Figure 1: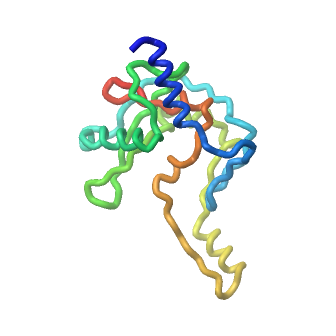
Figure 2 (figure 1 turned 90 degrees about the vertical axis):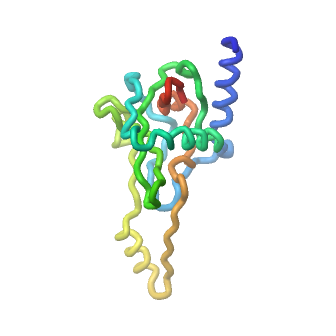
Figure 3 (figure 1 turned 60 degrees about the vertical axis):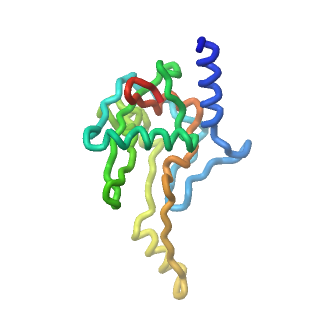
Length: 181
């Protein structure tokens, strides 16, 4: 495949990953997740670095299936033989065990390496996430008074459902078995 074919594949993959919000709509975080409003993505300057897989040996056979699942769901573009975007940053992958035996959660560690990570380049004064606490829920239930109902739910893959601005795609790379995603 020539360079034009590679570029066409990248454009197609990026178009598939583009946010689907309505024009002019202001994205809002889900209930219980407070994030300040933004007039656009923050300026981020991160040195490029290579992936350092975290704890790969005990779960390496599991990784290709998880990566393919993310690709099939349209959350991931690739694989590419070369970095697909200018300034492409590779962050480490890791896994953590889930409650179910033999099940693992894929972690894309944007906080590594410490001191020069994608997350290190984000100003926490401008962009931070605060979760609702149990105390917040109790206070709201008390304020509503007798008869108020309290419910809890879990959104599967919640952070993978949040849209990413196309200008930031290059910050979300990783490398696996010599290929870029």
